[in-house]
Image (cartoon, rainbow, N blue to C red; front, side, top):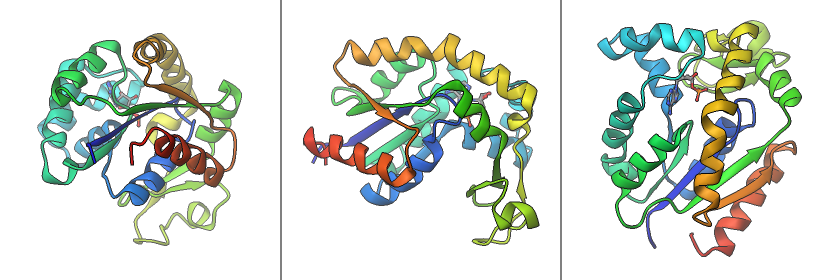
Length: 218
Ligand code: AMP
């Protein structure tokens, strides 16, 4: 079977992280989130983290060159050989072109666009809480969010800095501006499929798995 490279697109709050976690388990391929990598670097206080901290806090995009380098390094690791789920990357057509170069001839297998209206994205982002250690996502009303302790690893459960209301607005505008052209990029290559992301997580994963199977990708 060829390498399974799934690009998961959708505005913040569309459910990319949730779906990638499920599909990663389903296909035994790593979930690579550039946002998680960058946030991890900020938290660890590495040189990279210090370079990007202000950009992340403002909800702006870091440079194509920087994320392209990060992704190239990540895709070169052995666990990414059978395939990968890309979440939050590519974000611009420049990054999409760089990804094609990184992948070589086989390229991207499929691009899934998780479709949700802006209003739902804002509601989901405002109520999202995340474990700083293992990245598990909770809702504001979940016991883990109320107690502030992750039931999986005991880590702190917090609201992401970029899920504060002002940052949410900035990120959604940046998404429209920078990422919408990606839909055209993948549509024109016959690789784009739209999936209704307003449904329950189970139904959304089932829909994606059906498409992957129908295309003979896994
Ligand atoms: P995310 O978790 O995907 O929403 O990403 C959080 C933040 O990380 C974004 O608001 C950007 O500042 C940065 N970031 C993540 N992925 C990219 C990317 N592909 N290109 C540029 N900036 C990114």
